[in-house]
Image (tube, rainbow, N blue to C red):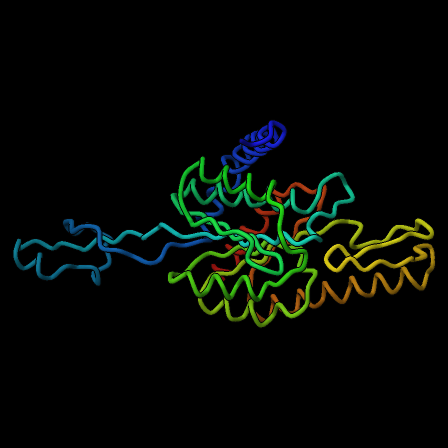
Length: 293
């Protein structure tokens, strides 16, 4: 039985998400994630403007009238949400934890997928594969995914994207649209993303909190790495400390940009306090422009 407060949170998220999907996302999603190919549908009489290369010569000869083959897109896709549930995802300085951002964007993607008759699955990972829910369709299935993202308590604290992507590649035989939802506060993700990209359509979704980008001057503060438990006393008012923090942030962002560009991955960055639906729409539009170029 789900706790009452969790049920209310899921219901509020569903209402907000389905409004965004209905108004903005479903059509954009369809335009940038194509089906597996074209499948034969039927033969019909030739009409002015039809491509002569589509003429079915056997039927044409048999009926003494030109007929063409009609093909339709095999639309159904498999979408997997690969969600980071490591300890760093529990951070949030604006009243919203990154884990809650992950649930919101996962819901928006999942409802967009099922609105287009696609299947959606979930893999939660930390420094291990925490939980896997196979791809299915339907509203109840999506609500279960969102509930698990919001309520799951992982056994691990660290982050191992390579392990998660490797496990997924071994068990997934068909090409998948793979959304990797994480703060990407980790090292060595280029190689596993490169390997995954060879088989899947990989979309990194980067979750950011404002305090992770600009350390406020709060004087002496004790900071803790949530994944290692390491603690340190830091003078946040020190210009040297603030410059070092900003330099580390800049290096991390530059590295993500370099890796995603090198691997030709379309990525989206979401910040706490932003309208994530609008951010996804901007991402879909940018991807559509790139695919059309």
